[in-house]
Image 1 (cartoon, rainbow, N blue to C red):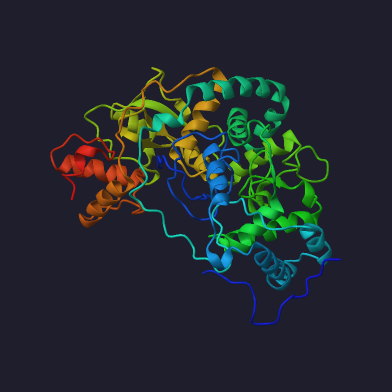
Image 2 (cartoon, rainbow, N blue to C red; image 1 turned 90 degrees about the horizontal axis):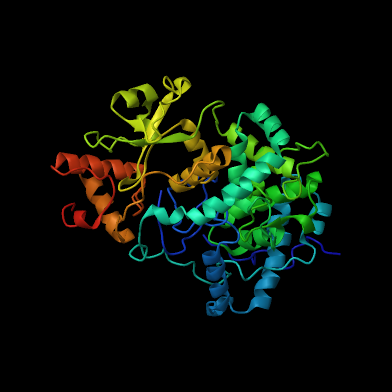
Length: 470
């Protein structure tokens, strides 16, 4: 019988360590743990996981490759003795995690059931075994940016839309009930379902308890994963799922909506009324949980996500962001029109809209509603939210690609963008995070600086500006 009595003397506890287009695999950037960013992976993964730390689907080829390569790299000398680290892990469970879990209301029976036979998963990325040194921050000169168009694979979007339309028809009655309950259109829910887990077909090959415990014990963000592990144990304690059935991505994201345990506890819904939310096996529960998530994050019933538009050349593109919202009628009065030729919906004219130019003047332009930013709560990326919106439009009415093409914005090094940000800050601009990633505040600051210096605003970092903006 596994017990939680500390296996080593006091004083000998385990070591305790202290919108973007990126080609190279990046460190996980959660959007629902308070670590906001504008992360936009260049290659569209099969899905994006809600409330989870990787910002990408469990099956992302690039990340799996990274994880595989990490297992082949030698660990620092002090961490190479894996059996010793495994013993430290068991001691940590007994003397550190166990007491914290019990304070959170987790019984010893639940703890024993959850951790029976659990060992560390050495295949995971971002591990910092006891005795090793945390990796230095990635050299910002390594990441390159290229056109956001690579994110919008037409072949993939068409495939998802075709499957999504069929499933929207199959589950039409359920989706109608979900929209009545939560106000979120069925096509939005189905689009997220498809993006996150391939409509529930993606294989969840990891034990969530093992993943979360490994990362809580020896990852670069141990505290965050410890909290998620405690929440996973609460799920087991409630009887929602057996530990052996709690399958996840490599970062602990659960089920068809790809919720982290904290998101499951907040948003998962027992829509089929079988006694508990089952986001692994119940399609109604999975779909309703996605809708409930969006509702709780502020989805406005009866409003679209946004509209592709044409912004007149004379109108500055440096007006992006939710803090510069104004009625859509006011945007229309400036000469902004929908590319479809249709007028803006009458119900939207008095409601707020926001300009969005994710590639500056080198790509499609949009007026988005507050619901666009709710989609970003699911994954904090302009491109992710645009992908979901476009896919939902295809599912609902057979829409196609954005009419404007994604132009070539060059291949800027992240360090180049960082230098531009620092130069803009020195000139008094608010660029948001000074991190080498061109979010909307960086884009509009750049556009404003261009206009004030006699240049036509492009609102996006480009090679020609490197020598001019210092």
